[in-house]
Image (tube, rainbow, N blue to C red; front, side, top):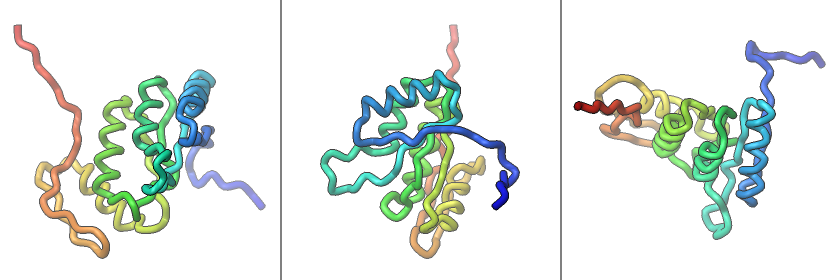
Length: 153
């Protein structure tokens, strides 16, 4: 068996467990200090599990505790989390973290989700409409985008 890089540089990271958030954040800080490329949190919290920590929420906490390590949801579940919701969460966290979010998709529904994600992240100012096999969006606002504020005075 020969190794293939598929045209991408080799990257190193660590998969964190959302079951214990404090140790996950501590490990993310260590990964950041050691110069690892990415930390991931699995998107497998069952909606009926009262102790489950949402992956995007935990990554937001990790983003605030680190400065340079990439952030990713491992196996983004687009069956339970509609692509439009995932697009907004990823774009918001990417803005708040200074562009550190990386997106990985689980195979189920990935083609349709990619079309929705790209549509919602487009710079096109017109609202986005999508009528696919499993999901429909009519006139969805694109964004979020970086906001600039001006101060007069």
